[in-house]
Image (cartoon, rainbow, N blue to C red):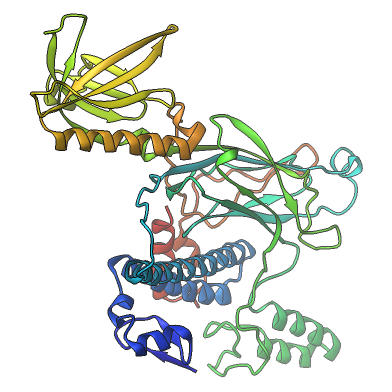
Length: 493
């Protein structure tokens, strides 16, 4: 049994330890109230639930194989996102409880509030090599096995899917041209890549079974009786499966008919795999040759995995400073300092920084830099900050002065946080890696057929058909479904 707080969506098991603590008054019900973050996740869950309902309706109404494959792919992606959002919501609620317990516990020690910054993680140029037999690829022998494949990528609460690709023995590599960017990754991220496959040789239309049954019965019963039976069994204009007079046919139809995708291989990428170049990663293959969705994978995936921590792309701190230039004891200059990435940029004025003017002085801030705060002189309340670096085998020290001890403490804290972020993000802070912005996603539901020397090339598509244009081919798809699917493809990226 469960009891539900009416002001929140969180469910608490009756008789659990958490419920007993609530009754004792150790916890307040207010800690389970929806925070702004909780509300955002709940909105995402509600959106994906609506998208899932639209995908189910579309899948039940599809009469074309390519449409059914795309609808089934959308349904699988929606389900994965719903599960991820629910897990994220549960983790947030547990974190709220644990934080409240730590604050109220009398024996809780000092808590270290320092945490590493977030960052962007991008995966691009994904290639999965295939290993066909010589008789299949070179001699073109055997049945032409064709599968629809796509990749699903999980990182925390973010889930993205690639475009669907048709694969047969004419291809040596499965190529995904998508650039997928995760915006809220931590240095301990785990990016799970899953390769899904589905055999395309079966007929997945909702009315395929009655149509096949009608064909067999008409040939068995004769021309006259078979014609009447076909008129009853074949779908009419009023419904996906009707007899033309709005009378529903009482045949067992699956709730969500259509193609089924299966995980063919997967791998998990972490910070250690990040490198500003094209690398090969091992795949764990889950299928075998007996599976209909099987493809002869080589056992590896090639991609470019790059990361941009926020400490490398955003200003960590800025403000007025005085810096000592040259060996003159009186050679102090007022500057506007900006700590960003691996450098402290010193400008004449703040306007120079905003206008992208070349800085007056650039001081390196890297893993080898040494920084200390010292008293400028006994009579002064201000403190100086000494920054030491190695340049050409020699120690070079730059001295900075702030206006107050509070400013010095603020700058020192920013330096320590920067060093902590660098220690957590490791090689990602050596230099800024390039991440290309993902291109706008094509609202196409049909992928062009692949060709080779052995197989006839498909005619080129002059323009990818729009989602709405394809849906209008099926009279059974309502305007509500078209709006949902149009929203899905516009909001995916």
